[in-house]
Image 1 (cartoon, rainbow, N blue to C red):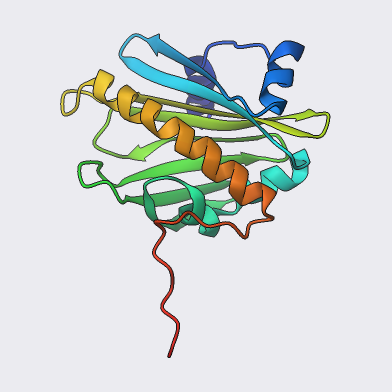
Image 2 (cartoon, rainbow, N blue to C red; image 1 turned 90 degrees about the horizontal axis):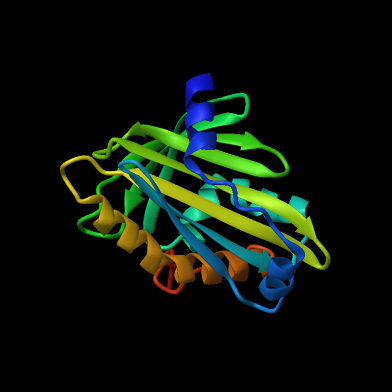
Length: 193
């Protein structure tokens, strides 16, 4: 577990949050930064949510609700858990994206980070980092993937980049609606006639 924490912290480059960035984020912009560390490629996306940090953390930590707002996520299942950690099995809606299992670590109220348990990729690392700001919270989503020989790293990075706008839009809508907003392509439960 210590090694996983070091790897997750190492993969993401330092990107200080400066007042000018907070102002543009509050105006509805989102910031995007790609990075490469050897074979590991990833990106960091920052955006602003008009909700306090504790509520944002609560929504992001609500595992059963994730498929309702996360792009391309069909289903998620908790396969194991212990204090502050859940092992989650993800099922994708995208035909060429394989299902995978991640170990997700919860550090309330400011950070949730994850590493690969089982996937057809060499490494998957990611994190939600939250920063309090006037009128809401700056949300930083980081994801890095080393694909190995099955899929070129550039293809995984491009898929990530394309999903960035949907991620920002969906998370913002879900959190700011108090958890009521659901993405339009999420399969709605059948109601009896």
